[in-house]
Length: 246
Length: 260
Image (cartoon, rainbow over all chains, first blue to last red; front, side, top):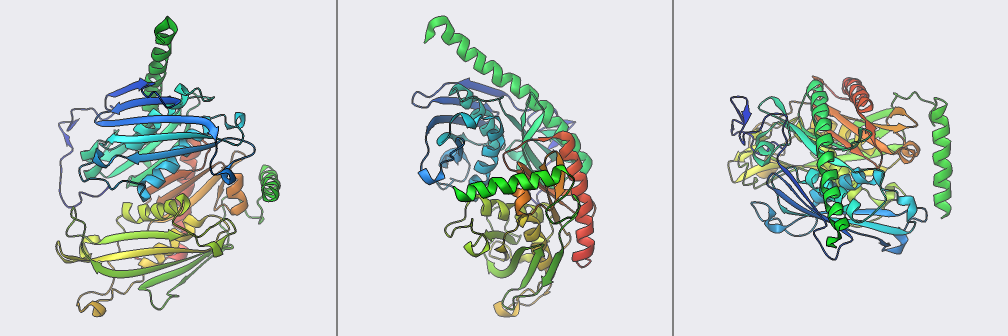
């Protein structure tokens, strides 16, 4: 946010966004389930120009052992950007941004995972950003949620995620990279669609209370649509294997 | 194991109190603990503040240095915020590289200051593309009895509002005051037993599954938010928290910060 300060970029022309989307439209979302062989569960996801792959391992033994929880499984989440995923090469390894995103994303998914079934175990989620175009954490959470289901981890529901933001004075859904760089605010959320429960919420930039309230509603509505797409992708994957393809 | 059991008992005790409409220190759900802000406590720092919220204590020190601007913003100063959860402050803190809690603390405080554009960074340019002022905000936690974010954010803005730019030390001339134009204030709340509590202490933080920090400005606009913890919140709860957050921020601003 605010990175492009000083330069004026017109993000909205004739009531349309630069990529032709309306204010309340998210980018095309593509979800593929079970794309990796070795992982217990996996998902490949595209949100516009974001390309993300998520893998789930576990439940398996928790290391280090002192970090085990005697009553329930521990959820681990690693958000990682490939060095080539952004314009200026990202130095490999965790930086402060990815440490924070990993924490927030883990906390977004944790509420739906029935951890009590697996005391002392770890459920590990690895999310790799292969190509990034703003909104990577929301793409990552969507992919991770599907990968958890693909791994057969007991869950009460899926988690769906999207960002809203403010560009050119308007509240819009799902900022792309240009909009994120030159926009006024960005607010990623994650939600359990069935119960309308918010499990992640961050806000960056500046907006009024009214804009925030409208933005939250808009994002919650979009999460319902994303939820339907996540479910459809899972159902498609498993109806295929029923027909004896696997 | 022993500590875990004590933790569970403490959690039960806290939840029981809250169910009965009470809090550990006997304060109201929307009441802060006693706050003390002491400014200019460190002579060597360009600005500093020691903030106490109840038994929570945080020291924020600000140092200014000159350096190169970022390539994508050659004419603006730089803010670098860091937080250290030193082992002196809690039996739960360990020495070593920053963990996710200290990273989150620093980034949330930073987000508030950046989002509100509290510092006019363009005025911190010394020579375009070559030399700008770098503002280092260092948060040193001394005692963690819960709600480090509000203490750190208040310490940061209080320190920033009282800074002398060390022009002489760098052979420069110019205005010595840091160009401030906003006063973002963070208000953190937790949800326990369906109740919203402002300024959670350590007990209440451990009993809560969700925590929300709302950072707002003098005009009531929002300049940063962060939910943390493995619980969920409903839209109506978030709306109420935002409302409370803005109101409480106004009170804190009026009481503990000088006018801009």
